[in-house]
Image 1 (cartoon, rainbow, N blue to C red):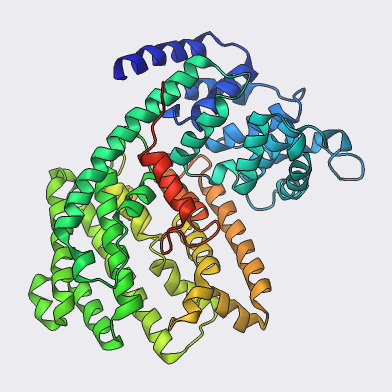
Image 2: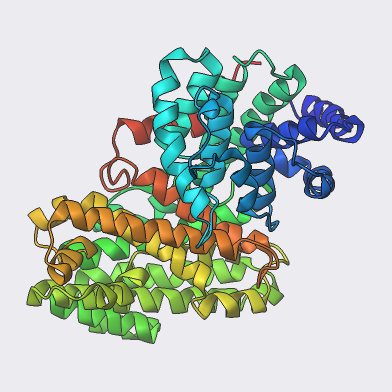
Length: 504
């Protein structure tokens, strides 16, 4: 398979080199990205994007204009959304002749989710395209209908890349315009990735079983496969193998920590654990209740072992993760106190704590630890300052989690979620609160989109880790909290990525 992949990669590189038609180049980039192949062709794609950026698209139709806009925005280029004004009539609405153009509408729909603040035309495009696509769905040929259904469920730019690749291969092979060289490469490449993932998961599972925390703390969620799958969404490429294994260990320990505070420990025990984590010293273990001692020592030991695996010039990275773990413990304690006191904080007060407790700050930080030279001390310093990109990612994760889980959590003995905070502060009902909170999520996505445009404060590769984790939140919390309550959809998705290979 490896030999055949290398042969096919040469052929695809020739396609990039020999293609002078801008539309063909754009379709080649788009297919490569959706099929999970783009990391093989970074130089070719960068060169092609420069040509696409310089190209005058005034004569393009809806599909081509939207595709160009999306590809350039996805790669950090500043492209004005005003290019879509040519598709509006004198009355300010999109012209009616677009209504039957399903391919163009889908292209505009996906492009509209890359908007930043103030780009009203992209907000209008979202509102316009969705009902149009729904009304056309039954009239479309199989491949296009499958794409429309997939992206109506969750837009392209908010999908987990490896799961999208797995699903899109099945759609692409039914497309009459497919390129069979690219299709074969996509299937073989996915199979090779999957075999690597299985080896990584085996390593992590052995470590997890040896750790035995899910057995000794039986009230916690035993979710090692789901944890690994979640980390795959941050980076699926083979060269991030070390980083995935490290980050999977961290997120699994954070999950255990969350369950201790959330589901089991008394307020006094939570205070003792928080103090121990802040001190980060095995000698304070005797200050903890018996059932937490093993967990505490293994938390410290795991972080120590990860640091030992790192190169000498990388070891400082784990201190930043430890600081994030201390911060999340303090946030968990604050929420435990709110729960005991039946305190419903204001939304701002809530988010000040719950953005940290969401885990959406510690996990991307941990994702940097095993990366290469691009993860510099300057990057970690930037991250630890809680910049706008990190804040936006935390807002998305926190609120999506709360919208999906607050009913279940309020049925138990749980502190107020952002939904309850919004309802109390603005004297409104649950439905209105969820709608308004969803608008906050959309604004956070606009922040993330803006922070992803060049020039970025740190390499875009690092911001992409935050964006990818936010994407995973959209997928995990799309219909339910699929981490806490793994349903058939979650199991099916994991099976698609980690079990079911392609016949080639």
